[in-house]
Length: 321
Image (cartoon, rainbow, N blue to C red; front, side, top):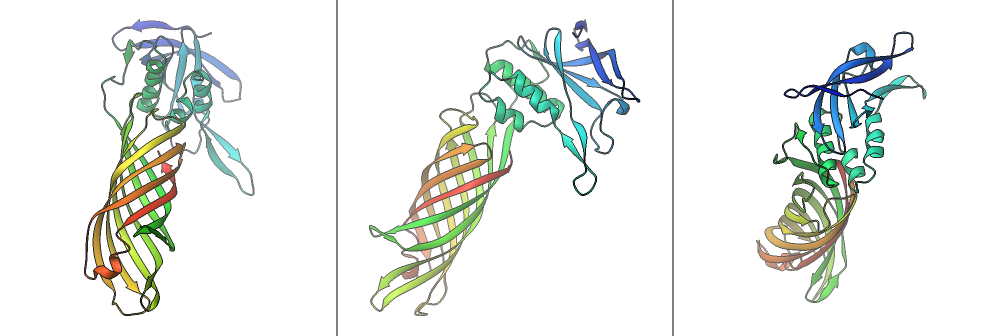
């Protein structure tokens, strides 16, 4: 049991029971003063600065701090420690023990898994997480170092791989190509957030065949594109989240026909996009229909097929979220 006594209502320091291993590995328990970061009727959060000798981190350069979370007299330590691995050679790795403890404490919150996974071992991030948890389950938050009105953007960096299908003059053309996009997605971190803005840039190398008077003509195109979209999550940002897509894509292309009857040409176009996607953790699958709204090219005959309608399907992976 941890004795929790509020001794200073202004700075909100409390006395709690802190346990750690001594120099010889013996367990030591002492009462320490810790700063209260969040006061919630369901879950509290405290910060405790400790000496380097009290934490199992000899090589990794991290702040000498641990956190405690809980309610009333029942507090659990939140920490990261080093683990020695000897698979072929000695190396140290970081064990994020705090994530497992928080997952157990927040088991009644549907968004707990995704929110905990993206929360770093930092004061403000942990405080935001605990504050959001209390608010999500209807608990009161009399005090938090994070203002309930604070606006913060979450950034999601992703790489998307996609393949397009081209519709032209009511037919589907045999189309070969794979594109790669880098996408930055931003959203405000609130529990009722439904919107997300996406900006991307990418490259597509593609070919398609079309019938001409002399036979089959193959068009090869290199396309650079800029993407701006607005995504809507009708059920909020959860571990499994379907969403709707709306936006625009601009293209800058060079194209060449295999029969050499037309020299290499350049052009630009703008498409409007509508679509649907599903996000599961870091992975997303999506489909878009792109409709041309205008096009300019130096040789419209080659670009006439490239500027109609695309159906793009793909998958993306977020390497940071």
